[in-house]
Amino acid sequence: MDSRHLCMSFFILFFLVLANEAFQDAFANSCNVTGGRSQIVVPRGAYMVKSAVFNGPCKGWIEFRVEGTIKAPAGLVSDDDWVAFRHFDGLAITGKGTFHGFGESAWNFNNCEKNPKCRRLPISIQLDFVNNSVVSGINSLNSKYFHVKIHQSHRIKIDGVHIIAPEDSPNTDGIHIGNSENIRILNSIIATGDDCVSMGPGSKDIWVHNVTCGPGHGISIGSLGKYDNEADVNGIKVQNCTLSGTNYGLRIKTWASDIQLSAYNITYDNVIIDNAYNPIFIDQQYCPFDGCDQSAKPSSVQIKDVWFKNIRGSSKSQLAVTLQCSRKYPCNNINFWNINLLYHGPEGSVNATCMNVRGSASGIEKPASCI
Ligand SMILES: *[C@@H]1O[C@H](CO)[C@@H](O)[C@H](O)[C@H]1NC(C)=O
Ligand SMILES: *[C@@H]1O[C@H](CO)[C@@H](O)[C@H](O)[C@H]1NC(C)=O
Ligand SMILES: *[C@@H]1O[C@H](CO)[C@@H](O)[C@H](O)[C@H]1NC(C)=O
Ligand SMILES: *[C@@H]1O[C@H](CO)[C@@H](O)[C@H](O)[C@H]1NC(C)=O
Ligand SMILES: *[C@@H]1O[C@H](CO)[C@@H](O)[C@H](O)[C@H]1NC(C)=O
Ligand SMILES: *[C@@H]1O[C@H](CO)[C@@H](O)[C@H](O)[C@H]1NC(C)=O
Image (cartoon, rainbow, N blue to C red; front, side, top):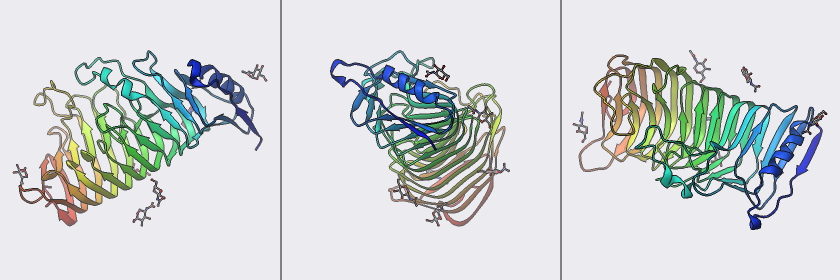
């Protein structure tokens, strides 16, 4: 493989010279190399980047290797995206460096909880229309909004990444997937303020393996049923993961609306949940803000063919399992096998609650199954 090494020289932050142009020049050159693999290296050091959007397609493989720290500007910024990659077939984002989103300077401006038309803050690393690619080793610190978003992409492997933001940082989802297929999230550590992994509409064939999550809101499917024309979720496997000190654990969340789609073929296997308030939660009346009229409509999302196998650990609340399904589309074929969740609080033994669920339970049943 012929390899070209482009080492960029940057001005140091002294004069707040932005590294944007250096990035774009190096990229334009690499993108044009036919065949083989070109490398763009961000060497050790700190570089301020206002926003960097890399638009493919390129003629060969591109490796974007980050050894230094790429810093986002502080405060509210006008760009929608911070670092984005679009239209690639064969991209590797590697290195031991850090994407530092400086979210701490912007989280106060996030008013999405009160204003449904809020303007969202920038996502740190966005992959749009990217195929056959890998993100490995890198760190993402204090994103302003999501750390990583994967959209309209196929065959992506995220391996050994480290994602960090404080527990109370708003909407700092670790990795969000939407309308994407064949995504692997492996061997990663995610500690953040929202979902560690969230799998939105159109997530298909996703494998989350050996991921440690916490703090955060756990590993979620959804939210689903909010927008028109959402595609089904099919083929999710969450395996050998540990959730520690999260508020939720394994959660499927759908809005109470007329928007119709299905989420099916979902397996959770060998997951340790340590001290979550709601370890297992199917919430078909999802409404993170006030002001939804929950009684008006049942959700139109059909959840079916779900397996919870070998889930163990502890619950911070007595109610370790909540299956609150739609009365219009009851959950179907929801199966529990060897669920062992402890509760040490004063109220009594761990319990479960079910609404509109069909399925089965066998093996260890702690809490006793409500199906
Ligand atoms: C890309 O390659 C073409 C043809 O070899 C050349 O004309 C063009 O200037 C190159 N563009 C860049 C940005 O290097
Ligand atoms: C990615 O793969 C999908 C499905 O194979 C294809 O439709 C799409 O055009 C590809 N996109 C790119 C950027 O290669
Ligand atoms: C699981 O991921 C951790 C990093 O979080 C890694 O150190 C460990 O080797 C991985 N375990 C396996 C079995 O791959
Ligand atoms: C279920 O999902 C797996 C991937 O997790 C996929 O290989 C399989 O084909 C799916 N089964 C159905 C019936 O869609
Ligand atoms: C998941 O963990 C189990 C038990 O710790 C192990 O036997 C299995 O090989 C692991 N699965 C994978 C795909 O590594
Ligand atoms: C489960 O625990 C909750 C909270 O303490 C309690 O309100 C409810 O009655 C319990 N349900 C069962 C079935 O024991």
